[in-house]
Image (cartoon, rainbow, N blue to C red):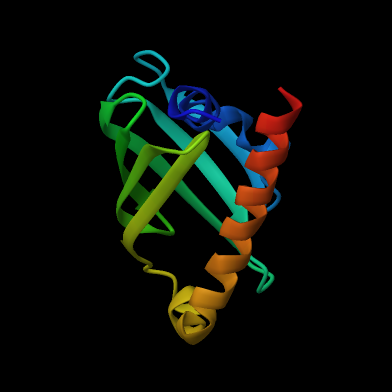
Length: 135
């Protein structure tokens, strides 16, 4: 799928639980307009390690359909960047997180974080591919 179609799915964060296993809930808490800076969503993520993480994402900057910058607050704090580029007949997405957690349990499980994060992201990639393929 071309970046504009992928962007359409990714910017509708409140719909992520429909196709992204592991995202238990996504609720818009501030809405200056879909895809507009200042848009905030509250997320609850189910970790493969058995705990849940709750945090808010605020869209701080966008250049549709190529780039989105977000700020995370809650169980995760920090920033994230999503970039999309055309790649043949499809899109190549790069998601970069720079986050920390105040939760002791999350910090204690840090050695397992790459594995858990990889599982959550792989499930999201599969779900997004299926969502885009189904139209």
